[in-house]
Image (cartoon, rainbow, N blue to C red; front, side, top):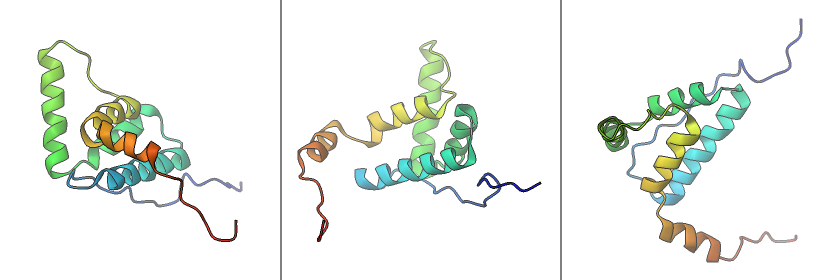
Length: 111
C-alpha cells in the first residue's frame, strides 16, 4: 500500500526559551503550527509537543501558570490553542501587535 502523506516525515520541532523578540516568537508559533498540521496532531498531542519544547524561562513560566490556575480552581490547559492563547498574552505584547498592523506590507520587486 502506497502512503502519500507526510505523517511519517521526520521533523524536529523548534525549542522556545522566551529570550526571543516577538518576531521570533511568531516564527516559533508558525513552525509549530506547520508541524502540527503536517503531522495531523490532535489538539492535545499538539499541546504535549509544544510543552516538551518549552525551555528555560518559558518552562518555568508554564509551571507557574499551571500552579496559579490550580490555586484559582481553573481547569488545566490541555490544548495547543489554549496554551498559545496564554503564551500570546505573555510573549507577544499588545503594543507589538499594533505595530505589526500599522507597518506597511513588505513588497517584492517585480510584482
